[in-house]
Amino acid sequence: MQLDPELGIIMGVGTGDLTIADARAGAAAVWAKTEWRGLPVLWDFRSARFDVRSDDVREIGKFILEHQPAPPPRVAFVTGRDVDFGLARMFEVHREHPATEVRVFRDYDEAILWAREKTSLA
Image 1: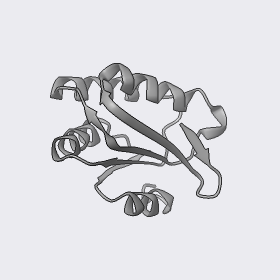
Image 2: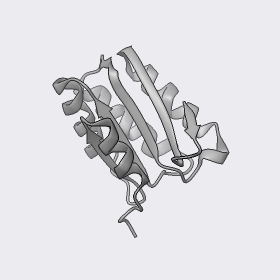
Image 3: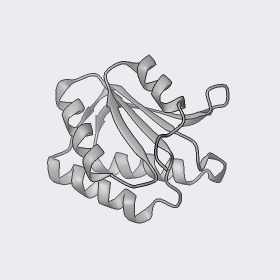
Image 4: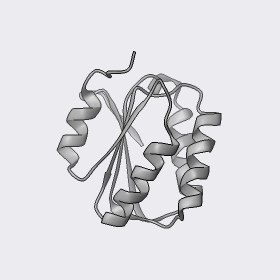
């Protein structure tokens, strides 16, 4: 996890087989940096495989909604595999919050452009 000050985006990269414990750890890493609050987040999972079931996706969505100290305006996920894209889309539904837009991408550059746009939520 790192802040890209030029882009104004928090960037996270996941590699290997990722579990629900990894999802919680990633969320906690973002929450630990108070100076990151209010910034969009981009998760790059192109070199990762989600080792989760649909119930796990629901659980992590609920965990984030219940524990997140300050919702970011936008969260972008970039995936490389079809199955991971589908699981991330499930998360998009379970993570729904009025202050945050979540979107899943296959194209990294498109995800960055979207994350940097002003949110359409009011």
